[in-house]
Length: 405
Image (cartoon, rainbow, N blue to C red):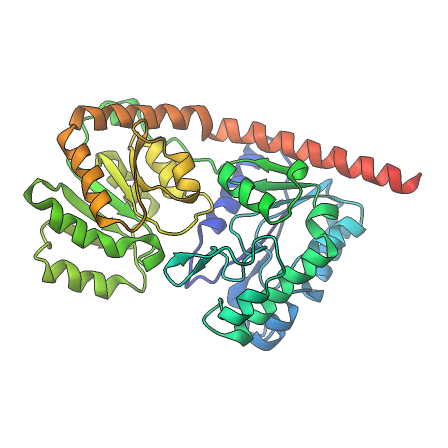
């Protein structure tokens, strides 16, 4: 059984897509799958709790316990795989599954289990004050929505599960998306022996002739237009690159859109920086087919950026900030290049190097495709998740037998 709490439709999340893709992958490989879902669009409506109750339920929710209890009675699953449980399901859902004798797995898509803000950021910089500690600094800094009342339920959730040792005793296997994330969770006190690195996977939508085709001199940014994604640096970088700069297509929507438009126009870059707004998956795939580089200037720790995997599948190298998971996924001078996060001078230097070495850029694109074939295919991912599930079932059985003895 796959368990997931969908984010609000007004703030779509890659986690929702990962949940749906993994469900399809399991079904395509003959696994009998049931889904237990809650949609955050229901919060504040007759179909869900009020906003006030949601805040109260964030640390420990009777809704999550009830939903899991009913589902386990109905379907008798061998294993429950939890994705997002914030804010309505909560970790109480995992306790209920374990109470009923089920094996449990949870994928940690972000850092919400150790950071009230979920991204280990404060303002426009990295913040690790709460790593390995009770999250009282988050309250003092009002880390969630710059509000102490809004931060309190999240801090309470982190503190409660740290005190109860939820991750050490109630989750048989913890899936993290990269070695970087694994190391951060180990610093936070999570059990290394129960963690497994399993990246996201990506469909191969490229035909042989797509991969052999000559890429156009177009570069891409794909992502939500907000400052932690680093999109604010792009106009200044392109101004510095001057006439030699390739066309940059910017795909996405978000709170920084109007400011970005204004900056592009004020710098006279309207012919060099094209804003596409939100695009469908099919449109994104078409843009990737034609592009020769993905620019990923994020200044935050990312779980596993879906767009990098999609670029690799399309044979597109990546110029990425040397920070977090992206620094692990993008191999410098092999599948792309690194630049220092937020450093416009270094961005200009590294991107200029790629402009001046088109043959190397094409070689990096071929390497990116090989990296996809080796690590990020559905086939490879299914083998990994099957092994993790079996480990969790064995762990649960061992602990159950010990309890009976």
